[in-house]
Image 1 (cartoon, helix red, strand yellow):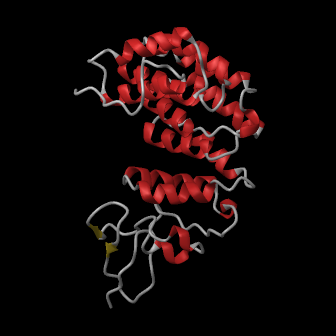
Image 2: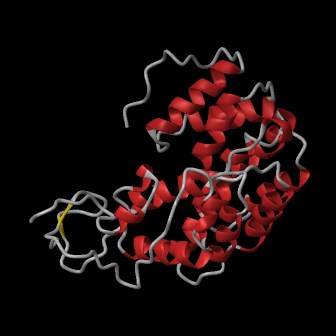
Length: 280
C-alpha cells in the first residue's frame, strides 16, 4: 500500500495539532523536491517506526509543555539542519504562546548555541514575546549589548516590535540603539536608526539625523533620509543636509525619493515630491 504523507510525514501521525502537519520527515528513504514541500514515501501496512532522532511530541493547541524542552530542541535542530524555514516558522508560532514560559526558556537555550542558525531561531522566539514583560526586556537589552555577530544583531533589530506604552519612555532601549549607531557594520547602523523610530520621540531623533545623513555608508544615509521623511522637523541644519543629498547625482534613486519627501514635509520651496527624479 502506498501512502503519500506531507512533511513531518510519519511523525505527524502522533501529533495532535494540525498546524504542525508537514514539519519533519522520519525516514531516510523519503524523497522530496524542495525543503518544506510535500514528500513522497512508501510506507508498509505494518507498524509505524519513528527513529530516536525524531522524538514523538504530543502537541496540543495550548502551550507545548507536554513536550519537553529537550524534545523540542531536537526538533528545532533537525529542521534547522534541513533548512526548513517554513516548518520552523510554524513551530515558532506555536511556541509564541505568551501564557507559557516555554518559548522564553527555549529562546535562552538556543541563544547559548554556537550555531548561528539556531541562535537566529532563538532571536525569533525572543522577539515573539512581549517586551512589556521584564524578563523578555532584560534579555533583549543583554543581547543588544553582547551579540557580536552583525548578521544576528541586524536580524534582532529588524524583529523588535515596540509596545506603544514604551514609546519615548524606554531609556534603556534608546541608549542601546544610540550606541549601535557607532557600530562598525553599516547594516547594523542603518537598522538601529530605523528601529529608533519606534522608541525615540521626534526631538531625540532629530538630534541624531545630521550625523547619520553624513554617514559614509549609503545604507545609513538612506535610513536617515527615510526617518527624516517620517518625522515632523523644521531644522534648518537638517534641511541643508537634505538639500546637499538632493543635489548629489551620485546618490541612489531611492535616496533622492526619500530626500524629496523629507524636504516636502519640511515645507521647503526648493523641492517638491512631484518633481522628476534625476536620471541615474
